[in-house]
Each structure stands twice: as structure tokens, then as C-alpha cells.
Length: 320
Image (cartoon, rainbow, N blue to C red; front, side):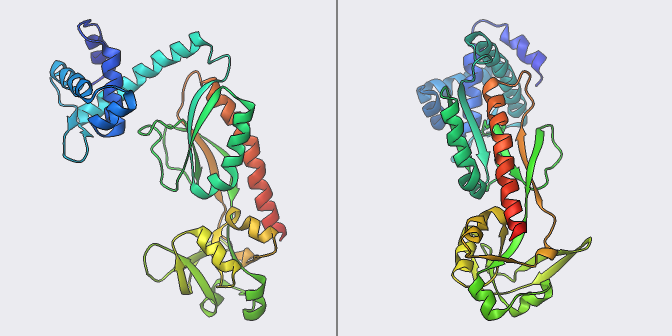
């Protein structure tokens, strides 16, 4: 279903189209009538009736109903995307009139990986809120890759190479993947000189399943897999860092996760010459014209500060 058809339907004044569109989008995002009703502050019966009336008018099924969740049909997915574009145009017009494009204000939703969020983004975000008192922020810290469109997120911080997409991506730094251990462990067991030496050391694996672990390193332009000997397996890199500090063995984590322990003298780096290529860090957001001032203010605030923090961490790791 295209926007031309949608605009034709809009001309029928028997129904409040904008309200119906907002309800359809809310149901699609929330996954059920009840969740959408709570989000909108509207009775479930009203939400259900609006959806049924619209489906009858369109002569198309927008949702596949099940006992657990409502899923969009192909026609419903196209319709909801068109609804989002029209609603966004209306909201943009209201923001223009209300002055949001002159004064940064309103709500923002941002997602970031869990560790990066706690270590770097949270302090940057609180400083941002102090500087812009008319902006509110929802900071979603998770290692799950959030669909920014489906979950109405304005901006994402991504670690790693990005797939091709229509999103705007701005690289603001990079993160090393490092191997580390406590000075006490290294003094007792020695320093590995090559990835192949790891079979002689206790290594802390990070996995949700019990399986043989392989760490990948770089020798020149080649990738070198190294089987490790692991007597301890944990499911988070934060736990691996703590275990390494206590002398349980070698850990392999993103550099920013062990920075504090390294600065405290609790961890040392090993095998630096064999580190893989650093992982790029990007700010990612959907193209919008014009870009809301609140989003532009956040991007301008975060970019130099997160870039400086990442550069500082990388520099300290290399200097160690």
C-alpha cells in the first residue's frame, strides 16, 4: 500500500485519520491492544474498534492475531511505515510552530551497548541533561542490536562494522580488543609470547555455552586462531575482568572494559603485537530533514566527548 492510496483514504472525513494512524503505529510497536492502550492512555475497546474499523475501511488485514502477540501482515507493514512518515511530518510541523527547532527541547531515545553505556555514555548523558534542561532522555543500555525504527529510537551507538543501510553513520573512534592478566599471575606463570603459547596458560572464556573457545589474533594480514585452555567460563566480559584481577588467568575483552583496572595497576596487557584490528565506533541515526534541534544538540555534545574518552582509553592501553 503506497502513500498515494493512503492520502486518498485520508480525504474521507468520516474518521479521524491521524488518531487511527497513531493507534495503528502504537499497536505495531507495542505488540498488543492492551500494551498499546496503556501507552496511549486509551481504553482497550477503543483501540480494538479503531483497528477493526480501519481494516474494514481498507478491506485489508493489517495484523495477524495470535494468543501471544499481534504481528503485522505485509500490507500492514507497508501501511504502518507510511503512517509513521505522515505522523512525523505532522509532528515536525508542530515542532516548527512550538519553537523546538529554535530551542532544543523534547524527548530523545538513545541506545548503546551495555558496557560502553555504563562506562562512558552515562556520565556524558547526565552532563548533557544539565546543559539542556528542556530535553529528557531515555538511555537504553543493552548488547542487543536495537531496531531503531521499530522501537522508536532516535540514535544508536554501535561497536563494530556496520551493514549497508540508509542510516547516517558517523565514526567517532575505535576500540581495541586486548588480552590481559594480573601482574601477580604473570609473575607466577610468565608472559605469553605468541597466540600459540596460550595453551599453556589459564584463560577465562566468555560464553553462554560450554564449548571449546578459540581466540582470534592477527599476524601481519592474516587472522590467527588460537585454541585456549579454559578452566573458568563466564557469560559477561565484566565478570572476566574481575576474574582476571583476582588472578584466575588471562582475559580477552574490549579495552574500555579493563581500563580502570589497568590504571589501578591490577591488570597488564599481553600479546599487543597480535591484536586484531580495532573495532570502529559509530553514531547512527535515520536521515531527517530538518534534523530536530534536540537531536542535533545531542550529536554535537556526544561526538567530541565520546571521541575524547575513546582516544584516552586507547592511548592509555598503548602506553601501558
